[in-house]
Amino acid sequence: MANKQKTLLDIQRMKAEGEKISVLTAYDYTFARIMDAEGIDMILVGDSLGSVVSGYDTTLPVTMDEMVYHCRGVVRGTSRALVIADMPFLSYQVDLRDARLNAGRLVKEGGAAAVKLEGGENVAVTIAAIVAMDIPVVGHIGLTPQSIHRMGGYKVQGRQQQQATQLLADAKAVEAAGAFALVLEGIPADLAAEITAAVSIPTIGIGAGPECDGQVLVIHDILGLCDKYSPKFVKRYADVSGTISAGIASYIREVKESSFPGPEHSFR
Image (cartoon, rainbow, N blue to C red; front, side, top):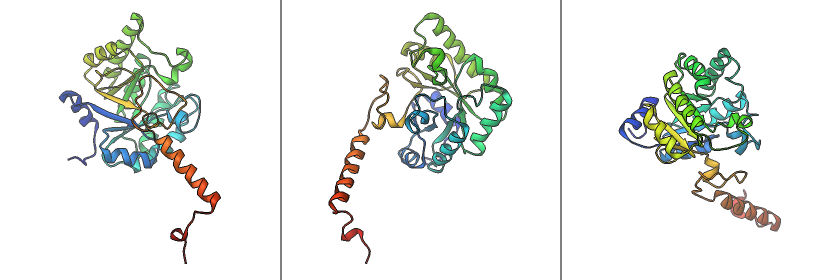
């Protein structure tokens, strides 16, 4: 059973049984294979790849072709985790036809089992249209990176009562539209707890406190591979950047000294 491919029913059952859901981002075969072998529940092929892989300042430049490409690699590296793919900016906001076609691309071409899109009441019709195609959807409310210009930066959402009331309404709208899970990003912990109790679908927190049904973080952040940002909600579990730097420095030194390659690395 441990190696069985997870489905959205498994994820929903975890909420019902009180088992926390572990989620990480991945953007390639290598990382996906490692985290899948360790037993991660869900892997998110996030449009965060724009920042941590492609070096953009925001997620906005990420294209559908990029998402499909990275999704393929992640799917090839998994055998048990549920793979979700982000729908990038402009892939679902223009009209329902685009939204359905692009969601279909992430499943058909990318191999994802589900898609994720940002927004609450304003995208409920879009979520319902995609779900009607039998494509599972994860919602995403609170701090939504594709709305960075409207929000004036990466700022905590829901501290004011009006915002909190809207976020609760957004969560219920996403659930009613048919999403099977909901990401809560950058909102106060007590509000996240209230939303988690108010909806029957699992909530996945990122900067939303401990009461969510699960947690998601960016793999580059927890391994110390990205120093561009250091959000308060990130915990660094390893300093892989230091290890990589030391290895590369050693390689450069040995090449310069002509100590690599040695006889054991050469053919006769």
